Amino acid sequence: MPMQVCMGASMMCTMGMAPSTLVVLPINRVMTDQVPDANIMDYIPLVNIMPFGMCMSPANPMVAAATAAAMGVLTPMPCIPMTVAPWVPGAPTVLLGSMPTLDNTSTLMCMWAGVITFVTPGEFTVMVP
Image (cartoon, rainbow, N blue to C red; front, top):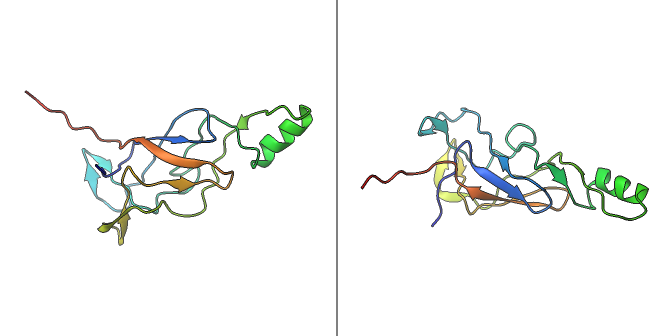
């Protein structure tokens, strides 16, 4: 079941070696448990999308150069996300700041061939017995 995503959501990149956390600026002024909710436009590298540890993608020029220097042995280098287009598909029926809200089934493409997905949506409901 899709869940709305807010600041603190945990993400993983298929080419990254560590999880990262979504950063959402309080521009749209909509909060969930006192943290900002996200929309599909929260994709800016090093503002919304933080590094995923080391990058393993041969499409990344730094990884390609280090791999060539290591005689063809894949050599991961520090991740610097290169996301240039919004998250897809988002939740088109629920708008936040005139854009679709971001749900945990959305994905984001990195120019270095990584696919970024959500591990957790950033909010948890506590059920009291």
